[in-house]
Amino acid sequence: MTRDPELELLKSICEDLVFRLEEAKLSVDREIAAYPTPIPACDAQFNYLLEQRAKLWHHLERFRAVREGFAKRDYVALIDDFLRAVVAPGDS
Figure 1 (cartoon, rainbow, N blue to C red):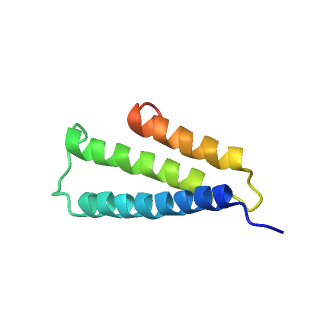
Figure 2: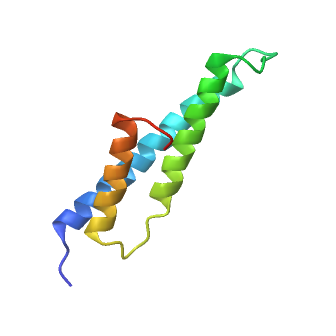
Figure 3: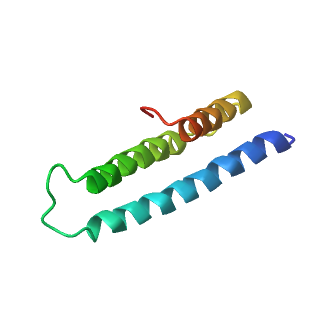
């Protein structure tokens, strides 16, 4: 069976994105852990950090769900969805 270089590149991009998302989530986790207490419920910065952590977790879960046997179009769709969420953030 011959290897598809485009598919291998897409897999590599996904692996790199997982690594970078994990690093970003760890950074946010450290900020949350070091946040001074007591934290009022209306603390906008803390709530922003929680929101960012939730978004990073969502993206990580999607990339971690990649299965062997994914077609190129599956990888392209996953990467495209991620980039759309990052460039035009919404509820993702």
